[in-house]
Image (tube, rainbow, N blue to C red; front, top):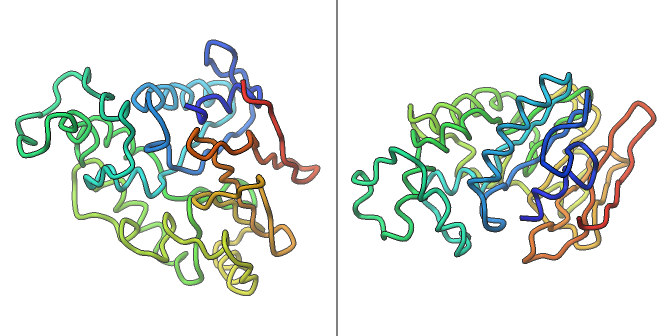
Length: 255
């Protein structure tokens, strides 16, 4: 899974996958699922990195993308063959509850459906996060959405944990996990309004593959960091670095 190789390439983990990034903050902007095999191991690793980074004074933050919400809702259109074999060894899955699901998909559905053990893991994650003067989100945050974002984050987390209805974000084409307006266009006026509502200087988005690598628009107010790491896309290995000195794209050879 190429996504799992990037922390090694940017030198925040060692060869054994342990955090060595110290006080560095790493933000992954969603779509951990449906991008390759070994997803169960990847989720377990991300959970471990969260704790290790925090203990070292840093942070490892991974956000919910549309594919996390899709899997929780039972939409398995993009699952790989290996992905269907994932989660079969999770103990205590309520498989009988999903007797109407094809056998090959039953363990995955039971693990990721709201209230399931790996849906509970995803319930610990957010739809967006503000770090310093930057907001990170999978798709994008349109003007007016800032007012309901906190409520939708709460709804998403509660739904994944098995309590309450799905969040607005699951089906809202203009919502934070589906919006592509900043990735495909340069509506700088709308972006500036959204940033002002959020009280930040820039937005970092994923969701829409940038074939040539990380791009920016609107004088650096939006950065598009989906470079197509998955084997299906074969994109470059890149990460965006934000420091007090400025913004830089880190290019790394695939490990």
